[in-house]
Image (cartoon, rainbow, N blue to C red; front, side):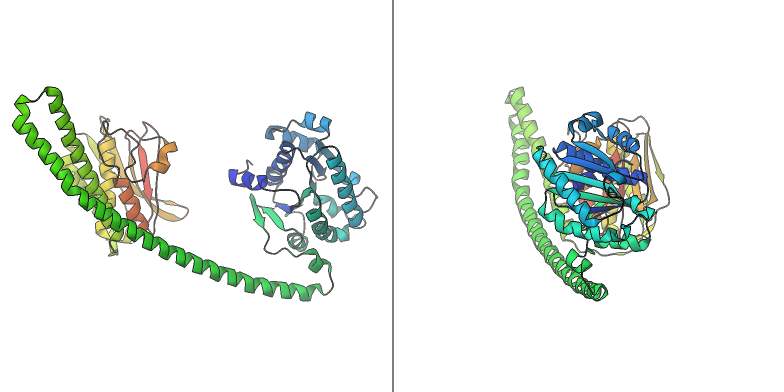
Length: 463
């Protein structure tokens, strides 16, 4: 099992004084956490000790090598040590929590004296299933570690198999560890019980008090989060309205100057054309084309602004009918090109029909445009299910794009292709995203250069 990057980042953030339990389902999940934990310590110049039991020492070393650990050098230098339960937990022939704490204290002092920056320890705890004398004090040891670790440059992960330990033991393991590693996630432990409480008398009464306090505190925190979220959403709405009003005002003010530029350039070209140097005539043509392009961008920006300010007028809508209307309107744009449309079944949706028609118009118009180099264009519209939810897609066999630029795809005025190749203002997909978000959905794309593109979107009100 290869650890996720987020999980590795969380392991990287661990530091001396941390005390974790790793609760794993199988060996793959166990090694996916324990081996990177060791590797990170070695890279940081820490002394690393792995106490083996369920797995042989040779098995652990073999698992370390593919993870980039130079095992032979690390063992030879003393940076990495592997021990068995007899060499650690049961060295005296029985388990004594206080002796084990002194063992870690001495190992930490020796590591620091040898020039290491800290001691890093992980132990396979399956030895506790053997019924050795003193094993009934295991949770006392786990809790006492929470006295030792905060005052010493040491961090530890205690490994527990969920399949082999009883639920009662796993419950106490969770209670005695400030951090829990489970399912590829490092979690702050909401159920952690400080050692003074765990080891003290009247444990049941204190557990009731702690749970009631946690319930009350959690409700208070959730209320504060709800208030903060509501305030943030209100600020976002206010700021969005201000920005949209500003964009509308600026865009509206730009339209007249742009029309004047284009108009005067045309007049000059018509009246002085025969007397103009061909190079100057070309400049006038470029001025006219640029002002027209800017005018189209302003119009699209105004439409984007209106989309954001417009209230939704939703009703049950057959999405297939919207697609058919858009395809009828696209016929003049297609001309005599060989373009085949395949429209599958589409779900009903509670949506604003006019805005959703704009979504299909923009996506299908893009598909028509970017399949222009193909002798036979194929554009498909349909729906599928992802993670149990209906997803609508528009797919083409056009020029596609590189997914490393996908983050720019829905930005205003962003273009992934040169204007000389494909016309457009770079506002169409931003409009699509704005409409989909207003409907409580999301939109994304998948593509490969030369292999076409597929745009997906979801709606909150799909049936």
